[in-house]
Image (tube, rainbow, N blue to C red; front, side, top):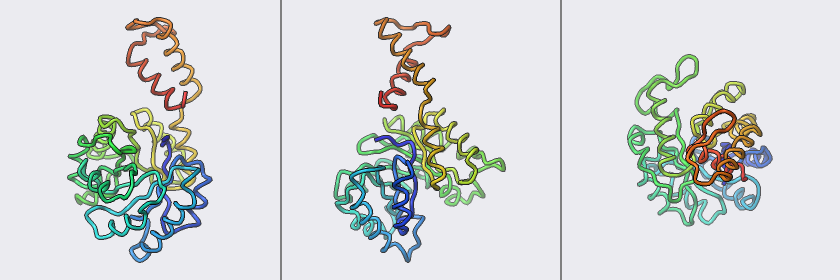
Length: 277
């Protein structure tokens, strides 16, 4: 399952869900949590169930974001999506492997789980606790955590993260790779600032994230471009693989005046695999 772009869509807006099918996102996250007011939860569940039933066979992968495990809404969420043909479930306020196990025990099906793994103080200390079993990836958020600890903001005046949230981002990145699953970058709130989004997404890919969540349709194309290798990158990767194939047993080789070795070969193969080559 390729997850470059994952677009949030409110679960109580069927017309937006229909429109989102044609926007080019790799996945849609049909939201039953923050985007839906308490009074609209029941209608959102019905709309999401109907939408998944009609659209699970083709198009983007469909995920449903349920409400947190420690609240009184999760049971109704799970009952509403029971047996639906979605790809997976997004779990907010996850706190390590135990949260995933608890959710999977509730789910009547072998659905992949995508934890939002940094939204509580305790969650930060479980970011290395995940294993890859049943996970679609691991992602993080920078909005709920500052509210949980009484912080004024997670960002500097220029939009960059403050030090505590840089740490959380890094721990999520390494936690995902330790679990052997894709690391998914968090959202970029300035949905009209596409240049800023492009720079943010490029940094995410540079650092080792495989994809990113989106909050607005305009962000999808920018994110897809940022997390897709360029033709130059693909050509370089092909050249590295071909060089080592032609020199079996070599530890380090020279390519275009630079030394390449096992880590370069591994990265080249991963890039080509991500591009379905």
